[in-house]
Amino acid sequence: MNALGQRIARLIQAQGPISIAQFMAVALHDPQNGYYATRDPFGRQGDFITAPEISQMFGELLGLWIAQCWHDQKRPEARLVELGPGRGTLMRDALRVIAQLMPEFLTKVEVVLVEASPTLTAIQKDTLAKSGANIGWTAQFDDSLVDKPLFLLANEFFDALPIHQFVKTERGWCERMVVLNADGALDFALTPEAVPSSLIPTHRDGAPTGAFYETAPGATALTQQIADIIARKGGAALIVDYGYGAQADFGETLQAVAAQKYAKVLEMPGDADLSAHVDFAALADVARESGAKAYGPVGQGELLEAIGIVQRAATLARGKLGSNPQIDGELERLILPDQMGTLFKALAIMPVSAPTPPGF
Ligand code: SAH
Image (cartoon, rainbow, N blue to C red):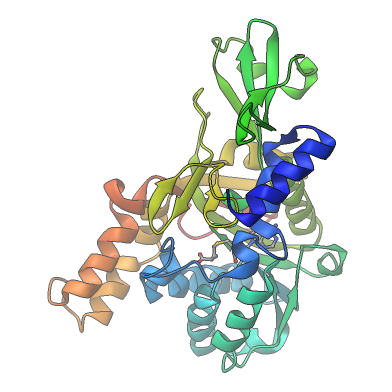
């Protein structure tokens, strides 16, 4: 067991089983040993590669999307927020095209990066040093962000938010917890008592024994807050992540990844990334309940094609697709259905009165 695993074991010994959400929060964000707190996990040598790290086209097109929505809403004084900016690559590429297309954006829109990790904050400051934008940082989305129209980007952020897992048993739905087993190792176990049935949505009523239900209360609360600002003040949010659209099936989706391979969830807390599928239907529901309009989710490939990635790739390849294997490869990776094109999805949250956003 690694050092963080031993600390979690001592915590469970002292306090009893912890939820999977608590385990995720500690494994990802513990200040000493947490996964994001201590490292830069991205890129070809890292644990995983994200869309903005695959190609500059991703950030450029999301930047165009934001610029178009801002223009459609009459170019207000506003805030552009990115949740979990990683290395800052997406924002750098987005701001570069926005500055070319609508320089006025940089004078009227304040940029705020929401980042929990001090290590990644330092890298983002470096990446964005020459952006020309007015950029601030905050460790979490809070009330300082409610007073202006909110334009927001989030790529592979929501999948890192803690989830709870419930399993259908003969005695009802039980929560799956992290416990110490007879060998003193971290293990999963269900609560002996069923949880109150009000915790489980009615669309899960017919689930078979052994079925999972996953819920991310932090993700829904945050979406509610974002949608509420957009409904009242204006703005636009584009949430891109891997996840399910209509309705989740009965499996579980919590996964650990280290060195671009799957790892065991409990085996090396803090040394592997932990993530779970994003329940886009649940996020769209809370956005609507908050008085905003939700669009999608549509596949990442569909969105990027609709907003011009093929043309952009051709320009980068000096006018001819097929002439530059690197650009062709990046394009395929981002949009093909058997790569990131369909598993990754995009959800837009808009004011009810705003025009339909590009690509939806
Ligand atoms: N958007 C980037 C990085 C995705 S990884 C990209 O596409 O490359 C997830 C990012 O979210 C990291 O920057 C991580 O440190 C940050 N993060 C995860 N959970 C967070 C939380 N609860 N609060 C703030 N930032 C968080």
